[in-house]
Image (cartoon, rainbow, N blue to C red):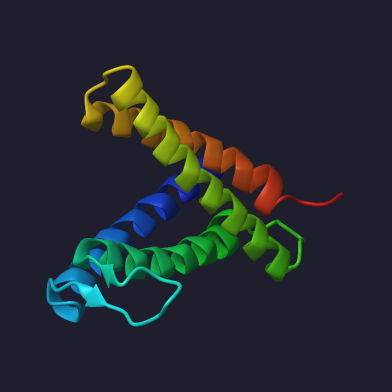
Length: 140
C-alpha cells in the first residue's frame, strides 16, 4: 500500500507538472521569452526555460505535500527538516538526471528517449528510498 501511494503521488506530481508547464508556457508567458534587467541573472530567459522554472516551483511544493501527507505519514521529523531534506533529494535528482543523461547519450551513444526512461525509473527508485529513509524517516 505504501508503494502504491508513492506511485500515485509521483504520477500526480508529474501530471501537475505537465499541466502547469502548459499553462505557464502558453497562457502566462504567451510563448514569449522573458527579458530581465537584474545584473546577476541572465538578461534573457527563453519561454521554455521560464515555464520550466514556474513548473518546478509549483511541483516542488505539490510533491512535498503529497509525500508528507499521503505517503510518509508516519514520519515524526519536524516539517521544516522534512522540507529541507526533500529539497536536498530533489536537487540531487536534478543533478543526477543531468549527469546521467549527458553520460548515457553523449559518452555511450544511447538513444535519448530510452536513456531518459531508464534514468527516470532509476531515480524514482532512488528517490523513494531517499525520501523514506532520509527526508521522511521515522525516529525511534
